[in-house]
Image (cartoon, rainbow, N blue to C red; front, side):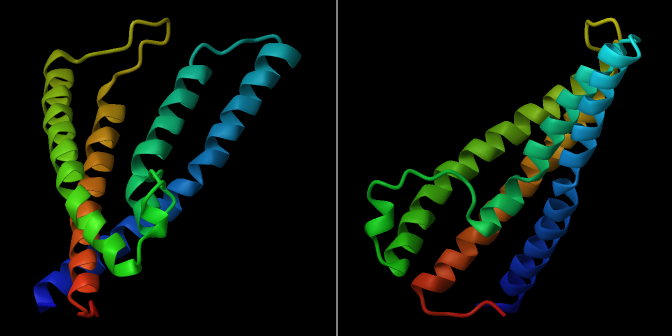
Length: 170
């Protein structure tokens, strides 16, 4: 494979692995927040209004930022009726074909997330709750997560080309 493609694949894989592994620890943050919610609501009897929304933000970030990593590790959901019976080379061909649909979908999501983030920043949008947090932080994380998945999808496409053509990505 050309050196620029190898550099791209290695850089995006490295970035998604680092962010994915860092994102794994967000589960512990969410667990801490939920335990704090239990303690403040049931033991101390001082319910905090921000806790449940913060847990929702954390799990959303976890879900969105972990997408690229789950693609690298093969932990994403796949319809396996026909795919599991294919050879590695034919799996790569099938992945190359379906990559076009995935990239189209992710580009559409990226476009929507950019316009949504712009709207959120321009209007200083907040949630309609008692806590009323700003929405731009989670929308920014959404934009980053979708971008990482898009970049990783392109990286996976290059890896599939390498598999089909018997080339190496070093």
